[in-house]
Image 1: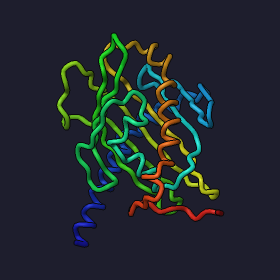
Image 2: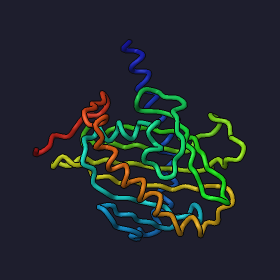
Image 3: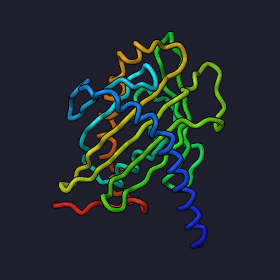
Image 4: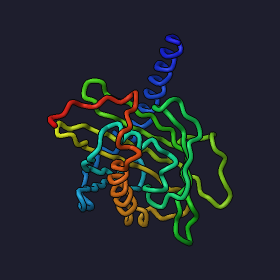
Length: 230
């Protein structure tokens, strides 16, 4: 049993390292631009900047969450609940899970006519810094796991990062990063024009989601809480 646990941790570490190596070039290139405040409302700040990797803008969202780290992580890991809070998401399912810290999942997003719906498969890894208690959750598109469907455009590229930093007052500071390409025939200028709408609505609903009763008393075995002043 101890050997299996060590093997699981080793493979999780390797997968995490690969994910960081895959995502690092994208974010390092994006650092050449300057973040500009796009929208600030309901305690949510949305920033955008040009990314040299493509003609689309990268997004950063900053806000404060009023929930425990376990509640937040449990809500984010509840793939079946994505249609409740992810903007225009009409379906989601877990495809393959390696414990609670690594999973592959599928989502479908509804787009208005004349555009086709989008779907994608993501590989997610969640881990916690044992010293600061900060929780990191990174997702990147994965290929060859779920067959493409007729009439739906498969999103060719998406990288996202959630960084949950616990504060002494019991709240959690969130930094969210997103860089993606919806694929298909949507013009880049049209995507950039409406780039803040979906993320704002998504984050607004996520802030309420983490307070729901079903996540409130959750204590995940791989998440430790920061000692607070409360």
